[in-house]
Amino acid sequence: MRYDFDTIIDRSRTDSVKWNVKDGELPMWVADMDFMAAPEMLEAIEKRMAHGVFGYANIGNEWYNAYTGWWKSRHGFEMDQDWLMFCTGVIPAISSMIRKLTEPGDYVVVQTPVYNVFFNCIVNNGCRILENPLSYKDRAYFMDFEDLERKLAEPQTKLMLLCNPQNPAGRIWDRDSLERIGKLAVKHHVYVISDEIHCDITEPGKGYIPFASVSPDCRDISITCISPTKTFNIAGLHTAAVCVPEPSLRRRVRNALNTGEVSEPNSFAVTAAVAAFNKGGDWLDELREYIAENKRIAADYIAARIPGVFIVEGDATYLLWIDVGCLGSDSKEIAGFIRETTGLFVSAGGYYGKAGNHFLRMNIACPKEVCLDGLSRLKTGIALYREHIGSGFS
Ligand SMILES: Cc1ncc(COP(=O)(O)O)c(C=O)c1O
Image 1 (cartoon, rainbow, N blue to C red):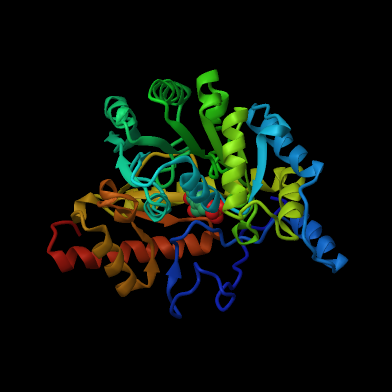
Image 2 (cartoon, helix red, strand yellow; image 1 turned 30 degrees about the vertical axis):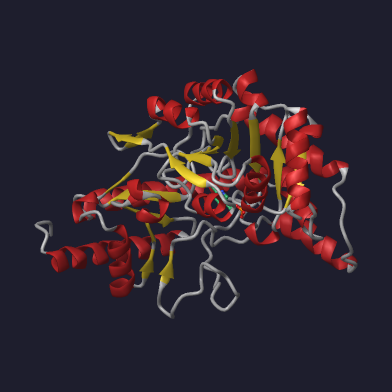
């Protein structure tokens, strides 16, 4: 490998949200990676820093070209430059759009289990959550279209928040499912915000399908949120984009981003995004291999040493969605117990909606040695929990 993903970098005392833990604890929760950014990106950021003047920044042509070039070459989707708008983050953009595209009390449909911050965006901006639970069969998730149509048909439903690929289970949505969402959304006059922040970290050889690329229906009712921040581990640089092909909807979204004051870049936001998409391809491909290897290690470890527990199928993200249903359905208690007894900090599945109650989410975007430490703590924590509840497994 050309790039180093094995070195353990001490992130304690760096004001990291993830690493704000007690000594000896191992955080494998929030979705950021324990890897340094690609050297090509560090070089570009250092060059920008050396300039030494950090006044208000503009969005230049190279930013648009970097996004359109990446989506064309990586995802086979030709975006027009005019469709793109800079924003400081996916969540700030979603919150601003909910405020502008709904009336207080309207419904926003989400497919649970899903990224928990979606719930805050909806409720904190005056709307109500309408859940379209995913069906869980044979260790994989599928959409329930009958229920989805009922929810989209509610007169107060104005938006659907789609997570494509899906966090927490890492499901890459297929063309047929996306097309059906587009048809139903058009039929019931609902806009779809497709959050595609996890689109680049997929199993080597597998890609995702941009929602807006699927059909004219999908294109015209879509607002797509994209960003280099998950892919290249630069969440702290606050740089993202919103893509809206349909001009009148775009006008409303632009207004939302401006009013929400989330449309202006910091001095590194453009440099970092441009370097990522123009120069980060090789690094990303090696990262995907590394994560796939960590996933294989985790799957083998859990299958061999943690009876009754298993990982849900998913070809995207560096997050493991672990079914711990054999321990009961109080994921918050299970995660709390594991943290208390072993120091391993994983996310309780219940945060992602009721449907997540018998799952844990574990972030394995870390050096292999750390991943193995996490798995060993998971094994110990689960064994102790079994003793604690008096379950039959050993
Ligand atoms: C699905 C999803 N959307 C958005 C975000 C956060 O995006 P941002 O940092 O750009 O607000 C995350 C972070 O984990 C996420 O998983």
